[in-house]
Length: 412
Ligand code: PYC
Image 1 (tube, rainbow, N blue to C red):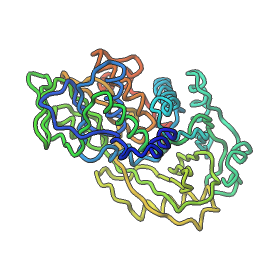
Image 2: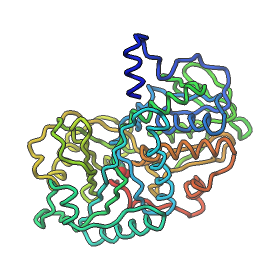
Image 3: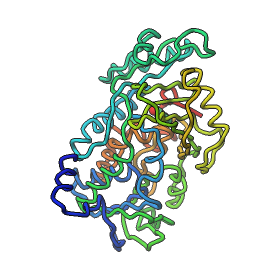
Image 4: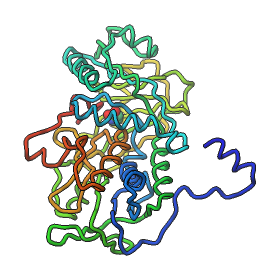
């Protein structure tokens, strides 16, 4: 990318071509993807790239990446608790590892290591179990003690005086952070170049179903005929599913996050504490990016609150007392669609031609490439890929949950 940019600057040809273009809405598409976040765009990209399906529309009610894709704290990891979860997120991490080369575009992946702290014997047991499952599935997470933690993160208070002593941590060397907007833009750019139509400011207002089959989508810009609608939304996933007459076991909660003023680089790992409900990393600009657990009440509000800032600051200072002078620059919220077992819902629904990739709780960003790839495979082949079978909607009726609560960085 940088060489291209230099060439562009020197040859005097301006302006740079658009990353993705605007199109009139066509009367019909083979596939309509509702939601122009990372997941929807990744699905469009893999449909075109791996299955040659390019008559695809991505309908996004705001600008692309305006939802969870642009509001998360950019953490990537695959250190989950269930074998199905580890396999799925590990595929996603591998796709992320190849992404800058695949896109010829720097997505700024920084695999700086990810530490999930344990403050109790119970938490240590869960970390050991996660480490074992990760090893069995080919991952490389391990449980480390306070001395090694201190070496990896000198400013962390590992002494025994805090209310929440640090007994150990699950260390995941391949975990880290990356630039979330770059992921969205990269998928959008390449999907566009292969013929996908990206429609921003295009809101789905209804889904037409006749005799149990999808026949089209109503939008604020007109009706689109299609036999395949993919719900790749977050926050509004249950509302979109309702339009097709499908009920999802999802409750939506806001999740708040903030960034501080920039500091000199001092933190080159990601630190998470599930018990303290906090996580922190330092961005390439030097800002500390921090978040907490979801708000206590279900809501679609995306406003910040003072209660969140106070609670987060209190917990963060338990871990990093030296940050007490640091000023907060801005805060925001995104929406998290929580399912009963803390795992996503992917696949077919009782309505033919209506498929879902929803219920991502607080994990959606790290799942983006694999979610897109596997949903594209499902749409193209009309079969559920083995990798995502555990996450089918029917598991809730078949008493076959995929319990990932123990791997949630932050929970309800
Ligand atoms: O699961 O890694 C995570 C996470 C980070 C922020 C919210 N969830």
